[in-house]
Image (cartoon, rainbow, N blue to C red; front, side, top):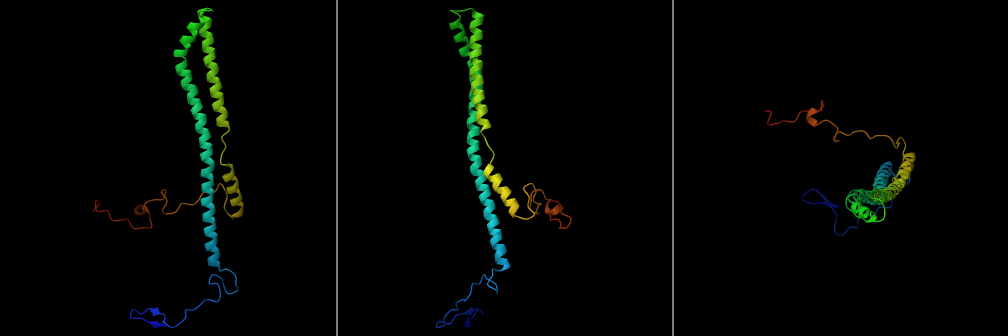
Length: 184
């Protein structure tokens, strides 16, 4: 090895580079070092949480579609009840008036419209009842909480200085106030 004009070590053209005879990530006794274990654990936890978020999104998309279908049917039931009561009501009542008293014809038409509205509302209600929470995500988060010591599903994370709920740096008692040219 020799040094170039910048003081950096360079390899001689005829020399062979050294080949490590052991894994540099292992300690003296052949076990992984604490640093490597911590690095692997933090990478695994990060991957686990990203996977949990992806699972929750996948579950909620399917449930949102069911909620949309139920909402759509309830809207249809409401619109049908509103418009039907004006137009179709008069048509059928006048038609039935040919065979029965006028008041009975209007009552029958009204009951038919109420029945249709109740049926659509019930079907929409049934669709809403089928909506489930992200069960797989909840189950896997419970499993994670048993693996990680000191972490519980209901615990709240502490706020970091960069969080939106923390005071501004100028208002912090330990930090100097930033110079504001408008204040002088």
